[in-house]
Length: 395
Image (cartoon, rainbow, N blue to C red; front, side):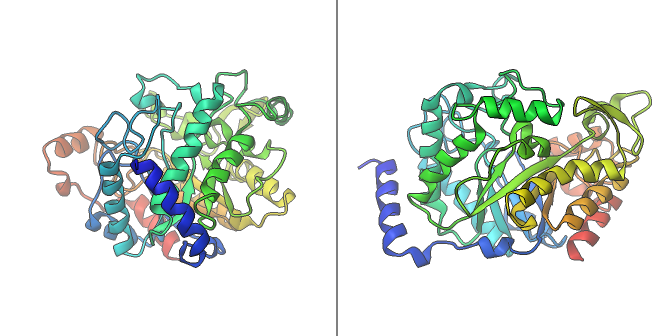
């Protein structure tokens, strides 16, 4: 019997003979929770997660897709042709979950890669559109998630399965990210039932998960890289009733992102003007709240409570002069609507841009040099931005 067949058979028996043993964690999400993203290039030990929980975080959104595995794509094996989970990689992932659980953190698993959709940074910088072109890859993705749910559904750290980080079925098919609300709705309606219909894809994947795991919550990102306006263009909520709807918040991206720091005079917040919704937007506290509010307004229209909405990523460059003001306005907007949030990111081991523990005095070159020399423990971690986040997580 293959490893894949064994896992599937065992899960069916477990899910239906002993349903009470499955993780029933929807209650974890019944009131707002705050945490951080863990997007590291290598697994971490318990001390790392202890440092995160000491900030006040109660949950993490964790990806394994950057880790070096036994084959090309960690855990999946080969995103060009998924067959079964790689047992050795699964053991590494379980050890990471054990480390988080040891300090009391809940974990949302969030792949960057699925069959037919390899993360662009591991794909020669090219966006991999095959998942949205070919239903065979969607079948493979559903099987991958059924296999993974089989393996992890009883792990006490698991709080949800986040199907795919920042999907963008619109990107290669005529969608306009900053189009008008009507344009977003029209594009979505035109895809109904097809391979680029994100709601249909999620329904398929969740159905596969529910064959082996009846209870663990599922988290889904909206389209256009988890844009709240793209989520708001969905004609309906998903058919499963244990779903959390996620968005990411980096708008105005022209100001919050790394390229802004290379300008002679970086764009400032509030006041930066960007293309938005078929026109222009002058970004301030009200504009941030309005953009974020699109997800909450949609959830309300679907009869969903605000605790089904998650700001699963948000952030800005730590050395940007307006980062603290921006983070405050984002957190205020989410909390005023009653949703969950997770900042990006905590002590990322290969990038310092949004490591808020680092003070602005730490230049990027200093981070990379110390990291490459194995001396990253010597980095000062008294940044004021983490003080800001810590105060909010502990409140």
